[in-house]
Amino acid sequence: MIAISVFNKPFLPFATKKQIVHHFHSKHFIRMAKSGVDETSESGAFVKTASTFRNFISKDPNSQFPAEAGRYHLYVSYACPWASRCLTYVKIKGLDKAISFTPVKPKWERTKETDEYMGWVFPASETEEPGAKPDPLNGAKSIRELYELASPNYSGKYSVPVLWDKKLKTIVSNESAEIIRMLNTEFNDIAENAALDLYPPHLQAKIDETNEWVYHGINNGVYRCGFARKQEPYEEALKEVFEALEKCEEILGKQRYICGNTLTEADIRLFVSLIRFDEVYALHFKCNKKLIREYTNLFNYTKDIFQLPGISTTVNIQHVKRHYYGSHPTINPFGIIPIGPNTDYSTPHGREKFSA
Image 1 (tube, rainbow, N blue to C red):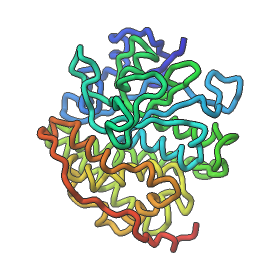
Image 2: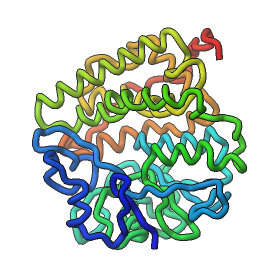
Image 3: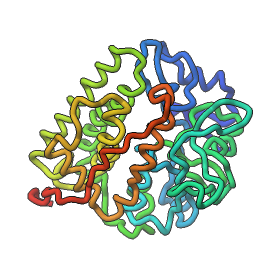
């Protein structure tokens, strides 16, 4: 039996809903979150819950989940920044031949006829939704079905990414921060770009520190703005979003990347939010104080990352816009998708002036 964990504490898949709720419950939470729109506290603030499948793939051939070519499959959404950073690692590390992946449809739909839950679903055919594919492994109709296959009594969020073990037919991990660490090191024997280390020992403390304030201020900060249900938590989150962006702008005026002149994990984690900012966060999440293209350094930095080999293939702006504007009826009840701005990230960025 495969154990999962909640907040790094062992948790078996036959745990009851009451037990899992107990682990998630705090003075802030009043209900079990099934998706991001549910993660709102009594104060009206958005509070992201933790991932629950936290197993780790290892290069050790004797481990429960050994790094093997062809064994693992990544389920992603091009719309989701957390899933997209995992797909980015597959591309940038040269793991396309070792780890297969399937993108879901961008817009949430009903996952079962027996309840109203809206979530990630697969298209019924290869041609139904451009950029999305049917589940090739289990024939699942939704991401929710994968969670229920891995753990019949599962009672958490049905989120992406999902790193699936084809051999054991279970979820290895749904925590993107840990999946990218696995992809960075544990598959180096089969990665085409094994020499690339996005979490080098001499920069790990700096990367961890940067990840913390970027996550709070930007990655999760935009969601705290968008899913806030009261004015005060929205304004508090907005202030922190733009303080973090201004900090990035200042740093990137002195060096090519966020932790120096070397590309690192922190850049990938920041990029997935920046590439979505002007298209959806500024309008849909009310983060409209300033656009990324109005920041000289941040805009050119975003273009710099976008133009790295393989990165542009992980960006599907149509999926991004269709998901956000179409899946959150409490924010955008008519599901109208703005036409613009359709920013061009392929133009020269001039970041070569910094030593690589």
